[in-house]
Amino acid sequence: MKVKKALTIAGSDSGGGAGIQADIKTFQELGVYGMSVLTAVTSQNTLGVQAVYPLPPEAAARQIQSIGEDIGTDAVKTGMLFDAAVIKSVARSISSFGWEKVVVDPVMIAKGGTSLLQKEAIAALKEDLLPLAMVVTPNIPEAEELTGMAIKTEEEKKEAARVLHRLGASHVVMKGGHDEDVEKAVDILFDGENFFYFTSPRIQTKNTHGTGCTFSSAIAAELAKGHSVYNAVSTAKQFIQAAIEDSIQIGNGHGPTNHWAFGRRNQLGGKALE
Ligand SMILES: Nc1ncnc2c1ncn2[C@@H]1O[C@H](COP(=O)(O)OP(=O)(O)O)[C@@H](O)[C@H]1O
Ligand SMILES: Cc1ncc(COP(=O)(O)O)c(N)n1
Image (cartoon, rainbow, N blue to C red; front, side):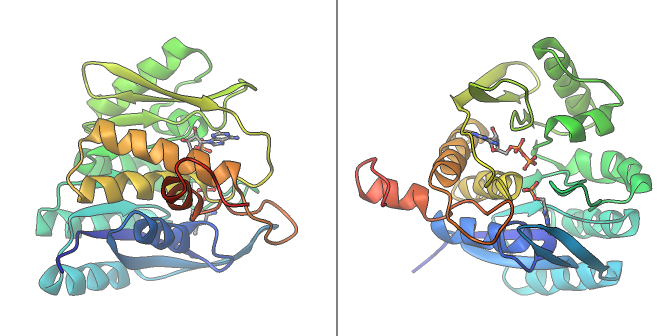
């Protein structure tokens, strides 16, 4: 049996809700073979990040080489990269294998406030990684860091997307999870010409740990299967909506999303399992 493959290059979340663990769960649920390149290990749970142990940049390069020389991949996503040296090493390795379906989730800060990317690494993210991105998926604070703009209005979101496109990302998804809109969660996709809106009801919940990781992995999985960027974002939006709506009770803080929800709904004709 032939299967499509997706690779995540990201950090480990010991609590299993974000990072590599969220990515692999999402790949599995969407029917692609998941692989991982670790950039850092975090001691993390639903209460926050207790410690970060970065790996040396050559560890990322060597893991990518092992995958590229034997297995190959149909799509790649990057998550927590931690510092400029890792970003440069990852960008060089992705280019050397000519991988084109690259989703860059510019992870900067965990929801509790711990930094997952050093400030001085933002330049490397812009110069080395964005030009390789088929899709970049910033939340609003990340888009503000990358563009240097204050982003509040819809027009500012569109302008920031244009700036990120100019920096080399062929598609930009401005995620709306951090918006002040209490009714809707709106993600805006820009393909260099047109803007497309993906709107869902905003769910009132504290269980949003790993939403960005899950969303970007779902895009990568769908790209691996050969879908267009528009269709990949559309499925990812449905996947994350189901995962937040049916969130599971884990830990005492900001719990994870439910990676089973989308698949179970589909099997059950639109109904979630209780
Ligand atoms: N409370 C919510 N209700 C519905 N969708 C949400 C909610 N929070 C986040 N999302 C969605 O989850 C995805 C990740 O967004 P966001 O939370 O902004 O990313 P990040 O985890 O990187 O901060 C987006 O598709 C966004 O619209
Ligand atoms: C290892 C790791 N990577 C990324 C995130 C961000 O998670 P989110 O998807 O909630 O922004 C995290 N908390 N930990």
